[in-house]
Length: 146
Image 1 (cartoon, rainbow, N blue to C red):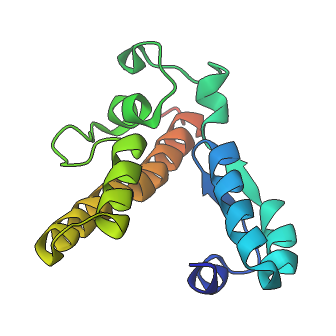
Image 2 (cartoon, rainbow, N blue to C red):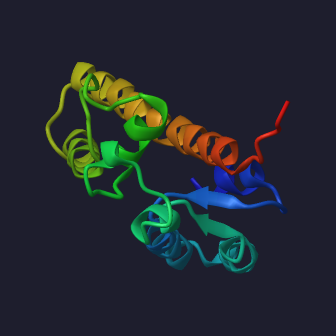
């Protein structure tokens, strides 16, 4: 994963994450297992921006969030997109399904199905962060008067 991630994020610009401490911990675990990536990680870590921060602090809030800063509430509030129609709907379920088909007695068909479902879930997480950033930019843009 680190071999693919390194060129994918490049050497400049922000690395946007939702709940950065969680993602940082996972990456640090990966780097501990593969210390050849330590110098890369040292530079990359400085670029991480936590998209959760403005929602957790309530600097940005919409009633449709229903008091939650979770991406599962923020994304629908800002974009109308939702996880409700996905087979995998949250991170805990994603982790359990991954573990089950990777280390359990899953059939090849089950592994393919779970992989497809994980790609849909992770894809919405990724595109969702993009949509949240776009929505925040739209909100922050000064309105012109005619």
